[in-house]
Image 1: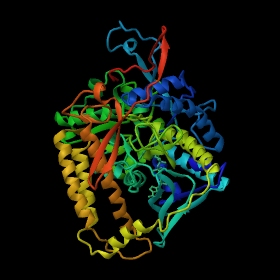
Image 2: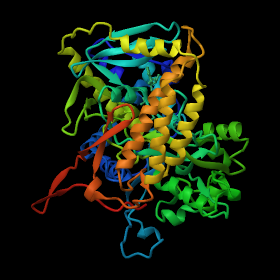
Image 3: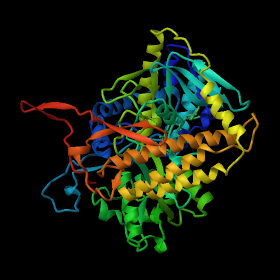
Image 4: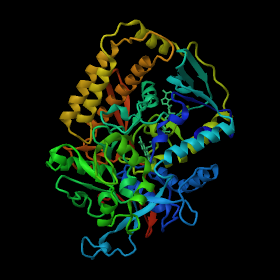
Length: 597
Ligand SMILES: Cc1cc2nc3c(=O)[nH]c(=O)nc-3n(C[C@H](O)[C@H](O)[C@H](O)COP(=O)(O)OP(=O)(O)OC[C@H]3O[C@@H](n4cnc5c(N)ncnc54)[C@H](O)[C@@H]3O)c2cc1C
């Protein structure tokens, strides 16, 4: 989206380590949020409120309002580019429900008997636009085709290894051509980082193997801080042990989670929205059930049930009407296929074993609403450097992202960043490149190629993933985080001695995987450092030793700076809060509230 927008104004190239249509966006299933109000009443204001509450009030409010307002036009832009959305019977874009997306309940009565319809202040709303359960695939294909049409130059399978920074200004990048092993420098007036997520830090993850956080790690090494890394989202419904995602659309369309006793346990934890509570709440609830011995067969998983008979029994279909298996199959074709292929379970007939899976980094490279990378609490931009997508943090997701809000973040802020970087490029002259900007990268690669192998690199990766999963996962404490910090220091020492076995230049994937692991190790250290410093529980960051949200001390974004080889230094940046006039007095537009679903 950024490239498409930028190329309308200036010459634009995309450097991508994957063939572009293999990017993880293509795996996004359930939908993209926008308050189109195609099936029921809705407004961008509802969407903004949900986004801020979903993020446990750590969301920057101006950024959230921009997101939810501009989302609507962005969806129509995508439609006009040819994106084949599912349709309603009368031809409008179809929408489905997703966790945490709500609207005020028109029959709400605060004095109503708890548990009744009238006692619910807010009710689920159909806001997620979708193309079956292949929404991301369609977005990616549509935008790629538009970029080709628009004359964007693609450097496919070029892997960025460094940024060229001179006097705090970005002048280009260094990348390796995967097919030849040759290093290239790209001289640019503005550079945008959109390298996606870093879920491969954890053992059980929904993320593709390529999601190793290269962009944020490289920025971090250049002294740019990383924002809010301690907030990492675990999606409640990953396939047991494999982590492959079973979209929240399963529950949006009526699926229900059960424990070993056959109880719909979400009734206990989120009496109002139940299975459609936010992801952090659902993931913690699964852990609680497992800890209480209510996992299936006493094990560490529960069931997700999307059988038509279950949806009908609990009246959880989007319309409340009865559905049949053919309807389920039509709404969730890929999910059903995944379960059949990877689990050997037919979800039309049986429930699916699931456990929380590492899914999405709310944090990343800090930016403003124009996609400009910022370097401090005063929001000072880094000239020439931009970021968007999951690798960036603007911050519209705060401490916990709502489902379908990532895809919309990509298109809204991708477009804004693309416009801003092109405008900057059109008023800026090329600044000279320093001599041999590729030298630090070349030295690192030569080192890896010249050393003999001390141990297989995957051993270090596996230990990092296990540590992060066990000690910096859904629940954390001072003790587990300190242990993780120490383990990571040991892993970094072993990493520094690594050599690679393949000494070749052509498709040396071993070499690249080692370099990616280096990025993950740096991000893991920054994540653990940020998590140790935040002594409260908020959104996806659950400290068992500090179980409450502490707005007095921690209503602020973390900025983690690299401090030596193994350390981080945390600074804090105020949350952007919108003030409005009410009865002649200035007050906050989105007052802090205790988050309940
Ligand atoms: C299984 C799954 C389902 C999801 N479903 C939804 C959903 O329904 N709705 C929703 O809103 N969100 C969903 N998400 C989240 C959302 O899909 C992602 O957050 C989003 O697609 C990330 O997009 P991106 O453009 O930032 O990165 P990606 O799409 O991951 O693209 C990253 C790009 O960066 C390139 N790259 C990375 N490193 C380098 C490097 N060193 N050099 C050169 N290029 C590099 C890659 O080649 C790739 O092209 C889902 C995520 C997963 C994993």
